Length: 186
Length: 189
Figure: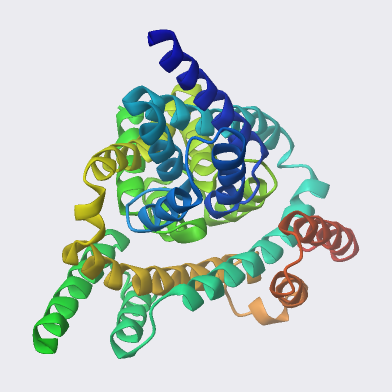
């Protein structure tokens, strides 16, 4: 019995190591891979569980990838399952970035590298604008959400208020407005 | 001291990030600037590196900042810091999932957080835009600078690529090649 759960934990670790090593583009890109490994190959979870993971990951703090790994690990093999899945998903990027940071610091002053990054920065800004557009499409629409968007934007871009307080303020504002709406609906 | 600082800073970033992708960017931007850990340019450069390497942006950026500021131990502290809040919160939520899902408090907070993240990333785009479009600084000659027009042109073309769902790595490679050619022709930066 004991060795079976140990096997499961090892298997979780290796599965998430693989997922971490082969997903480009972060959390959401990881979901289909998790589905394939965890539902189709290992049969630890069902498709509904995966939808559940996405819903939870979106409404809890932290990166989607870590939320998802922790959740799958915990549901499959308890606390140690969660710990090893999370380590598995983190380790590949960790080692790759540690290795890359040596190289980056060495070559960043070469003219060709500087010019390349000059071009890349403009391209990356386009990627971020695209990401902003996708997030806008997923966000709730209406007068209150638009006010919150505008407030968050002005608070940081114009008034230079700390992002920390803006996030907390918007969460409280959202909570209060939704409670008022709930009360008047009754 | 720097190790504790890295851990606590990235813990704070981890606990305040809601949503995937670049939801973390405004927080990272503010914190690395406040601590003087990375310049705005270095941060955007690293977004490109993160897009071209496997793994989540959150882990990549925390490892990189930690590594730059405090070596391998710094990288470990920053990455642990960013992962810890989600780990703890998910363990709690997994135990009382039904209660969590039907909670009016959670859904109420999320109704404020989702649009807030859009506004915050919008603000990040504006300040990163200044860095991208004016590599030689904002000043009287900013609009007479070839570097300004070239980066606007690259941004415009790459936006079309991005919205046509070109692969990010392809987009980054093309931008790099254009940057190198433009750099040697105009000696811009």
